[in-house]
Length: 215
Image 1 (cartoon, rainbow, N blue to C red):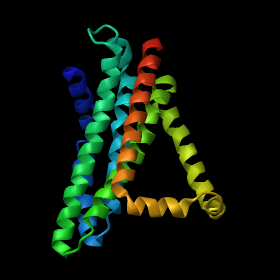
Image 2 (cartoon, helix red, strand yellow; image 1 turned 180 degrees about the vertical axis):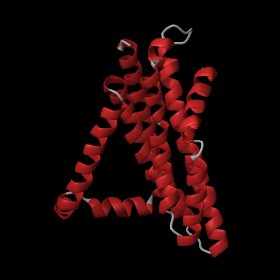
Image 3 (cartoon, rainbow, N blue to C red; image 1 turned 30 degrees about the horizontal axis):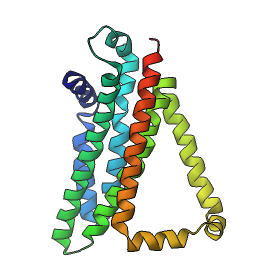
Image 4 (tube, rainbow, N blue to C red; image 1 turned 45 degrees about the vertical axis):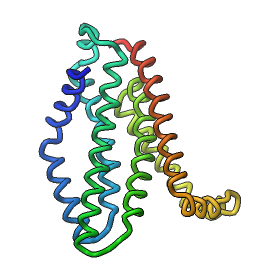
């Protein structure tokens, strides 16, 4: 398992060894200059999607066929990819928290709870999106999975922009927002548990698909 994890991490580093340090510096500068946590949140989302790129490397070099000859189980091959996504997202969230704290120390601002809450919210949403892509990517390929989820995301965002006012009349959105503000820890814990549940289900589905996959 450690060898598979090292393989995934080294492959991604070969792709992004120039990009990641540059983005880390850029987001730090933009955060300090604009005093806007958006760049910290966006970094978490981006890192999770970067972690998917290991599948492109596998598809390009025929790794799946070679892996069948190795003394490793299918659940280990799939698990290594999920672990890499957790490492990338956790690292980005930790980096964002450190930058956010530094920015607040320099400017004398507060809002530490908002920073942590925002990072957790973005982490949860990104985890659900990315881990749900894994079964689709194992079944149809990474590019089709990315394109499909992009269409779904644009449709959801566009639908909310077009019909958000109507939904607000039907759904108790205002009551939900008030409840989130009154019980942030409860909502955060529930969201995190939901993300973990989605991850486990998607992992099981990915293993089942990978076991039947022919290379």
